[in-house]
Length: 532
Ligand SMILES: Cc1cc2nc3c(=O)[nH]c(=O)nc-3n(C[C@H](O)[C@H](O)[C@H](O)COP(=O)(O)OP(=O)(O)OC[C@H]3O[C@@H](n4cnc5c(N)ncnc54)[C@H](O)[C@@H]3O)c2cc1C
Image 1: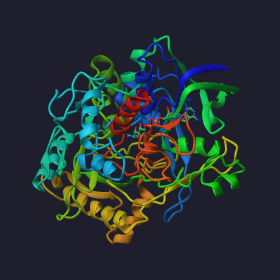
Image 2: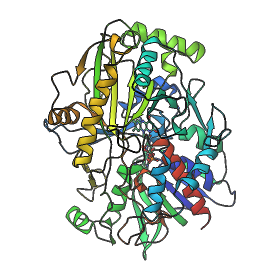
Image 3: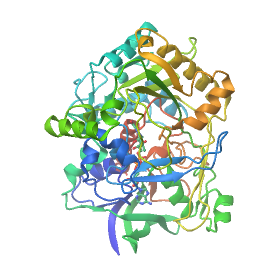
Image 4: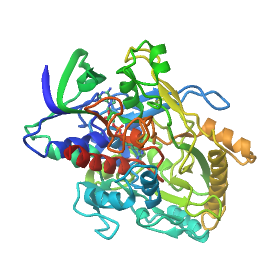
């Protein structure tokens, strides 16, 4: 059996940062364990490969949820399964969330997580093409740029937003007002900047860092109330490794609570009914889950504009690939969503409560765990969600067998806040698409369609035709109370030598997409771990 100072489970957004930071001291040995394989496929570096990767079981996990909504559909929650984790398959939109999000985290009893602590972290990790400023970083490992596209259709969409009073911006992270513009993304010069390319590959040759791919962690080894290692399978064979200092779970907000529960740390009733001995009765492991419910709107265009024509046929795809190969340019060098915007669903709000992302293509009805298919006719798609949902779902094991399906209950739109905000956001987006100069480009709404008008109809359509935001948080949330899963230093309560560092530690949703925030959480967590 092998022994290391630190074992990090999961080489995703958080795990790659931790591996980089913890192995910086050559006197410390680090094992990074990843269930997926190497990230060598060119589809990862090419931004346009994201939609293909999401449907490919070699690079993505597909976790089924409980049936929900009017049609009792089962939804598949996608996560990255390779070095870089979800940052290798995600949509690359770069948002950090705002001052108020982090200040709230701190005011809930988590010292050191407020904006004044986190802004310097973001500035350290960023290499923003807009250059350094009071609120931006340059020269850091993570490449970020605003992917402009001076296309008439997109310009008209931005024009409609500014006509509604939303500010046009090139840096969404500068302010928290109503704003829209071309997507700021973890892309530079036509290449994705994943957590692996930014933080892991540059240090892979350190002799004190071991990276074990195709290695699944099933359980944390506990001895006398201390985490002493991990147990799992490597290429199908039993695998065990020991940690002299700490085990750190960074397997993401779906799997980290699963591993804790399989290790006997979780709600006693869940563990007992799954046949797992209870080591620590920790009631909120897997609970307090928050996820964005993304509503989808689609529109038919009056002219043959947008990407359906280019990417909807094999010839068009080949031409786009040739353009990308020749110059790393064209549509495949862009993030899936061209425009991002934030707005208020009610004028009296202090800050935006809705986010949308707009693409100049439209998709056929989603099929579980299948690549997206584009429509043939010209269309635009918009996905949007209530920024800070407070409905609480859960993730529970159903058996002591690590291969058994999880019980994932999204519990979407369970609160009045989430329902009202979601209805407001759909109405706000219809206003955007009905405003000139964009209105002139729109023939009609195809999804959910003009017949869907009442509040309940809008909510039902969002549940049946929308999707998850891929932003699960809260399942091992930090907090000051005895029953919070981890303390503000991300140590798992009830045992020693064990931390959680990934999206699951955030007790509330940050206002936006999650890759940037998780990267920053991991950077700060590394400081805490190194400080002992
Ligand atoms: C399809 C998709 C699109 C997204 N789009 C965006 C976007 O545009 N912008 C944005 O900011 N955010 C986006 N996100 C969200 C963001 O990427 C994630 O929130 C973030 O990457 C989560 O980081 P993490 O470290 O918590 O987990 P992950 O990055 O998911 O890492 C977890 C890692 O653990 C590994 N693992 C899982 N189980 C085991 C096991 N048992 N043993 C060992 N290893 C295991 C996984 O393979 C993975 O590599 C998207 C996410 C997805 C899935």
